[in-house]
Image (cartoon, rainbow, N blue to C red; front, side, top):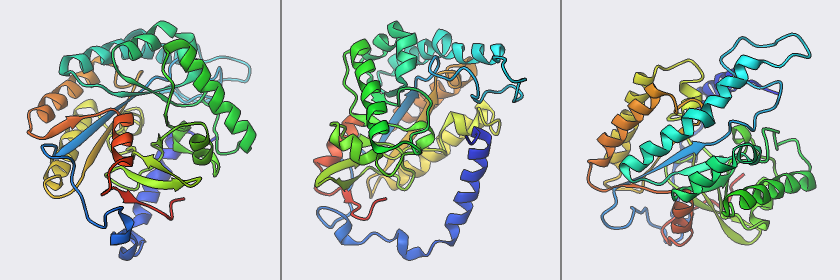
Length: 319
């Protein structure tokens, strides 16, 4: 299985390669929207910010997981210090992040691994009780892209059932491990009653795709404002991450005057839950929330709004 470091490198190369794609692919034909017109958010909203909080700690495998420690212990041994790095996510990280969201009165989408919720049911319940969305993130860290249709369907059903039993919430959004879905994932999600997925980096606004004869929403994710991509990847300091968030916000806010823009921010329990990261996130939220027309939304709210929006982009050739 590809390591996070290798994934980061390949993602960077893919981004560079996109410069070679013909310009016509990026042009938006009028037939690509329900109304044929470029749209903005509802009156009074200039930019929507959606924050993800991945709750994964406790759901990692016993061996073969990525961490900041040097790789490859001798066969048969568990990396005990690395396990404590994950434990930080539920002992300190999520509680600290929950207090930060409360400080600004914002609700986030928490992508929860089923096994993480099972190992820490009280914390999973608290996330839901504080008004945040519980979104699907798989039963565990097993990659889905290699699964058969029936195996993947059971994998998703088992995670939905586990989270519902613990939190009382039925997940309607989904995030695959490292965004790597199979050719069947979206069809299975539609069949099981999900209304959106986030495993997409192609736009800075939500859009609609046809799946099994029905509309299905895509609420794009981010690698640009993602702590696991920049911080855990050891490329950015917390200060640099904060600057990245502000630069992204400023540009999208400017564009938001004339078109619908969505800013996605991704936080992980064991990474953004550290004191330095919470400090820069606090500073960013203070900066962004003072601007007129900024609205923080959960991803399920964005998905429902998008599916009811006659001006939403419809990508009929989505893969």
